[in-house]
Amino acid sequence: MASSVRVRFAPSPTGFLHIGGLRTALYNYLFARHHGGTFILRIEDTDQARFVEDAEQDIIRSLEWSGIRIDEGPLHGGNYGPYRQSERKTFYQKAVEKLLAEGNAYYAFDTQEEIEVMRERLKASGNPSPAYDSITRQSMKNSLTLPQEEVERRLAEREPYVIRLKVPRRETIQFEDLIRGVVTFETKGLDDQVLLKSDGLPTYHLANVVDDHEMEITHVIRGEEWLSSAPKHILLYQYLGWKPPQMAHLPLIMSPSGGKLSKRKAEIEGIPVNTRDYIDQEYEPEALVNFLAYLGWSPGDDSEIHSLDELCQLFTLDRVSKGGAVFNHKKLLWYNEHYLREKSDDELYTRVLGLAAEKQIPGFDAEVLKNIIPLLKERVSKADDILEMGGFFFSDPEHYDAEALKKWSDETPDLIRAYKAAIEPLHEAEFSADKLKASLEETVAAQNVGMGKLMMPLRVCVSGQGFGPDLFPSLELLGREKVLHRLDLALSRLSGPGAS
Ligand code: GLU
Image 1: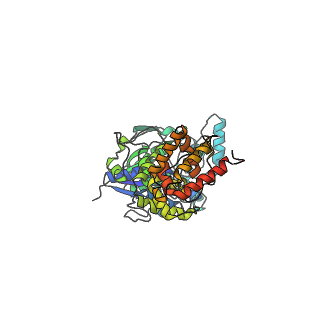
Image 2 (image 1 turned 90 degrees about the horizontal axis):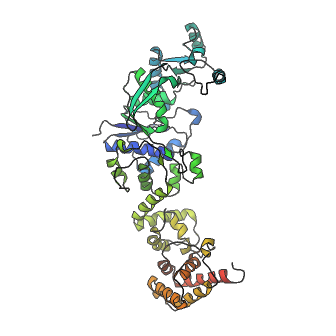
Image 3 (image 1 turned 90 degrees about the vertical axis):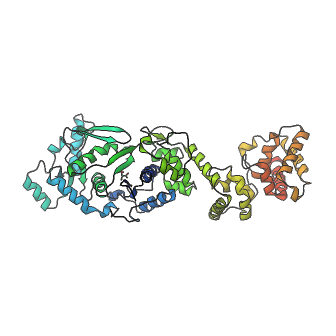
């Protein structure tokens, strides 16, 4: 039986699911599963101007890819629907009526221009952040300042209006955040939040509170950027006569160069920002989940690798940190390598075969791919790197890596020729990693040079690259004919007239 814990992930469908959003969803999910509770997806689509058509689909796809299972949601059903705010207008209307009737909200008829004039006037008199608040409301056009007949006339004539929360002048609002402890706000600094917009739709604040109540949400777990909204929400709960859910505000995700990891910063630092980028770039979902779980939380020991199920067992809010968590891309790749190495060769083969079909790899051969998987699995950070790093198994290199060629000296061509002479007599069946290695050792000994003098140039000749899978097994897999051909090719390209 499900416990009474009910949490929600409540994204606004204004774009693709951001990596920070995925972490919020994950923490909610881990918390729900830890307590045997319910994880709800609620789409907060009341901002029509910022609505993006495919966003909801992208959010659901991203959650599913991560292994997060939605218990209740727009496509998943549940007893507390509908799960899109645009379909829940009557709930908000009822709440607004109660607030108006009890004097905790009011009609405001001011135009944008009039509000602008008020702001400019206050700025000019030394107020750096003027707001529509308990003081300024007194000189504006609203149902608190206009005579009642005029308010009724304006409403009857369908003049545009918004409904604002009547924030008390001097009150202290306090609540206990499960991560931050007691949080205190003075209402003095709060504006009279718009609750219902002139298009009749609620703002985030009203809809969020009404739905958390109606959906019997027990814990609100969300990003720190919402902490400053919490006092308005607490006031709304109070005025609506409802018990607020417990709240937990998660630490910000920080950029490695400092400051919040914004979209722009992420781009500059080469960090993919949307979950779909991780899907498209062939990250392992287990790796991203494990990494994100540790971005602001830890189990309190030095363990680092945990499956989603284990994380569900381990996760508690008291181990979530207050301070910002720095996004370390190298750590994510480390996780990715770990989960990649755990995959069976067969599974990886099928996956990379699919990728190869999309990519048109010159000279591609499925049989060759099957053979190189075990060799490359240990070397790459991501599944798609297998095709890139292993491209030389399918076709002759077209270029030789400039960095690696720095080790190419005047003696190199003779060394390569000597090695070629040593391996040429080997029959195809003898062309094994062991024999190829022994030949190299003999060659360098006879020439009285170190191994490195030959290893690196050899690798460059056959693969074009300065790094890659183990050299001798790679030579064995390439086979006698190709290796000899590539040595000749490289010698003619790199040591002939006009070579660098
Ligand atoms: N719709 C808000 C968002 O886009 C939800 C914030 C909350 O969880 O209260 O993040």
